[in-house]
Length: 116
Length: 108
View (cartoon, each protein chain N blue to C red):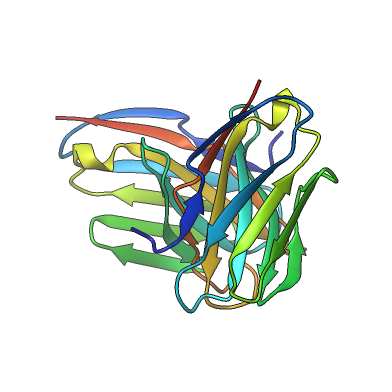
């Protein structure tokens, strides 16, 4: 158990809908990262937050947004969902705010999103 | 051509065998990570390397910055090592790039 929790585990929704995925980092970790893993594109980094502020941005679509709250949990909002958004969404946390070059990351179990 | 290539894509080994998974990249990097993804989907960070070699239990990771190549070795492989192994590099421009993974099956 990494200490990172994600809810829900599974989510099934329809095209055009909006969903929110939630992540609670390990106790004491200030950074939260979001990743998407799909069958055709593999793992992709979406976005990083550090202590409430956006720190780094990857291949995140404009239809997607994230935020980190004062209690350090984070939410990833996906809107106007398309079939191609079906994927596993992972969050990870680390203690520092620097990039992957310096901090080991601890991954949550993921949320499997199915868009029908 | 992908900026991060892993080989082989699939690997089947017998329990006890020595296993090598390779990662080659075409960009300048500041660090490289090896990740393990279990059949259930969970991801574990195995190593973070910027030079040389690291060892943890039966796992050894090496990196040759000049040759732009890293290897992950598993000694005395066990069926519980069956997983997808993913290489990820942090480019010099701070872009995170994942390889497509190597699916390892270790048979008893």
